[in-house]
Amino acid sequence: MTNMNDQKIAPSFIELNARKRIFELLDNESMKELLSPFERLTSPWLEKQGIVPQFDDGVVVAKGEIDNKPVIIAAIDGSFQGGSMGEVGGAKIAGSLELAIEDNRRGIPTAAVLLLETGGVRLQEANLGLAAIAEIHSAIVELRRYQPVIALVTGPVGCFGGMSITAALCSYLLITREGRLGLNGPQVIEQEAGIREYDSRDRPFIWSITGGQQRHAIGMVDSFLDDDISFIKHSVIEHLALGIPQEFRSDAIDSSLSRLLSVDTTAQLDADITRKIMTQGVPL
Amino acid sequence: MDTFHFSKPALTAIVSPTLVGCVSSGDLEVMIEPNTNNQLEVTIQTAATGNEIRWHQIFDRLETVKKLPAMKMDIHDFSATPGVVRLRIEQALEQALTNGEYQDDQHE
Image (cartoon, rainbow over all chains, first blue to last red; front, top):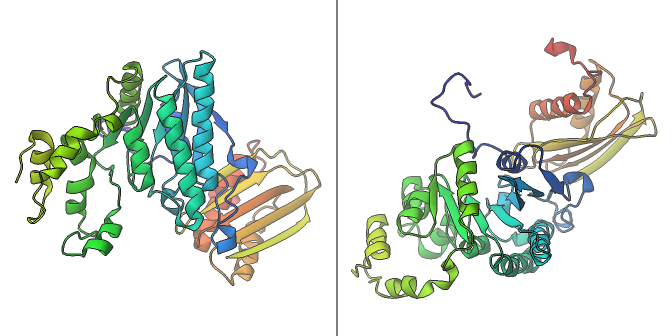
């Protein structure tokens, strides 16, 4: 229970559920949820595999306003099936981004905010989840030409798999210290590379590689946020006001690629060396 | 996964659509919607199999305090303990029956 008298404890954003996160980011009374849980649009595939579904399929999408500007906002509920993207949840995000694109074609400057708490594609829905992620990607690539698309990775799940590509495609990417970003999750890397290479239960090590602080230090994200509702909302407003970036991160692959190619993979990398390579281009 | 359903006659009440909780480990979501045919209709999907008797016991126990009104209640349970189940159901009832018709005496 939060002690409201203790001014040192800022109200946490990470502790909010997906719907409450959207409610807090949007202007007062402007939230209009699309395909709410009362529509009962659950995954048709989970029940067949003996898995209990959730009424919103783990994704909340809404229209509303941030700082009096129209936005589409989607939040993934990381607590349901690890925030995995299935057919329904993926289509909700893709569809809402497409609504924003239609708005922009008609002259309404609708931007988008994505709150990503996801392990990537839902394995139980395999190809349909992948197809949904592909639709999300093409929608972001189109929408970001009109208005900013902001991705927010606050944790505790982080953003992995195909959805980490989603985060990287966005105009701006914001992260907290608890947030993590990576293509493969720690357990997948451990399984493939061995526990001596990558111990997924060594939390300080995992966060030193994929955590928000490191991702910000090596220039993979635009802003590093405190876990504070008003601070995060303020930062989203600031990035919406920045408009379309001069160069999209996904177009700036040459510089990252040249650094990666210079890495000597015979020696074990750690967080400090990675920082040096990515920021100063120091080859080993 | 087990799915079961039960219904019985109940008194009408003003019920607003409500959703609480989430389908994560040890938790459940409870959705309440109005029902026009004077029936309490409960549908439960649960990850823990073989517990139908326990679910009936939870509802019997709830009704020793106050009879449940007519409504549709849908539960998606991800192996919550009976204590958590009861808390979530009471939370949903408190939100759904905003006119204060449902007052759990034990909370007074």
